[in-house]
Length: 239
Image (cartoon, one colour):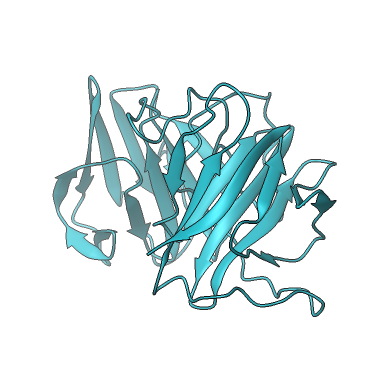
């Protein structure tokens, strides 16, 4: 079932399943999703679900509706689209299997929360969904900066253990979240300085080269070995 993940200023607020054919968004309490902010109109936009397709339609709002920073009136949503309504961002996730990126739903991007994460029963969802959002974190002073800016070379993680051994995921998005909601979640962020791994959720932090990372963003190096949920993944740059 498709869903949207609502965030504000890089912090995830909640995720909502699109379990009806019409899903309204606006400032007034009668909407399916109420966003109590003056930048949001009383009836701002509506999501129309037509089978496996979801359309966003602006309801002649004062400040308009954007998708990936482009003004829209009505548009079919694609996996990972970011809907901007005022200062809020809603990321659309179809939760359909992806040929090259769905590692048999063994890892997830369910709740990309950095600070307050909505409590939900553990559920496996596809690994690479963008969702979500993350506050900028400063790398530990003891850590060495990445070898090359992410803008020059594309980062990649390759699964080295488990059922998906050998599969690769290109880190082309600003945020790639890994893990399992309610158990262990981490995010790899793409920044001008390189790629950084940050712990998001769970009692156990992910490890790099058999050492757990701290609470701050960890700068990834070529050939670093990441371990999360017992799955080992190698990080490298692709020229």
